[in-house]
Image 1 (spheres, helix red, strand yellow):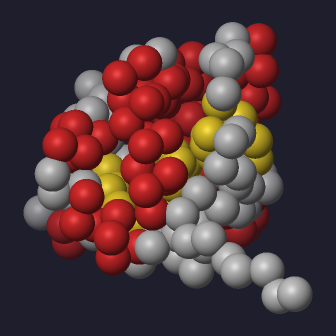
Image 2 (image 1 turned 180 degrees about the vertical axis):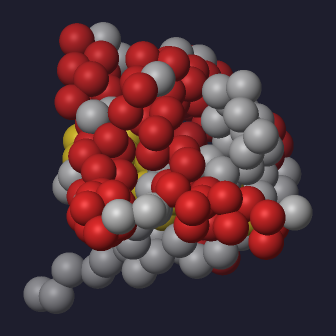
Length: 204
């Protein structure tokens, strides 16, 4: 079947002009993909800037083209917070494992603080130095790759970023607001940061 499809595809390029046009288009694939993915950033930032929640900060980070994070202002950007990164994975992420006790954080997340993990639709990785929970591109567009756009399917996911932008944005907002709009989860995140923050001694 695959060979038959290949032969049919080859048959389309019956002139140098058609082949050259295909090659030029193929050469633009990465540019087109990143153009699609970048369409998500500004509408997401606009939503969170116009719908602030007291105590929470939203800002670009990592890959400035489309990565965004949310953290508690009282603990700063190096604390445990939420992040969309690595091409739209959803993370509960500790930025600074020197300023916060990462191992103690893991242990606490296995107690009542596990509610923070339960707020994810799914946890694909957990209890790492930086990543305390991660959901791998769990998005739904009615495609064969729904709920698990792994690294081999980022090209396919990018089309939805560019052409189903509002739908994509709404799914990210839902994931983040599950935390920001829930006072209990926000308080739990606050307490977890407070209990694991490493106090530095001042040199006299």
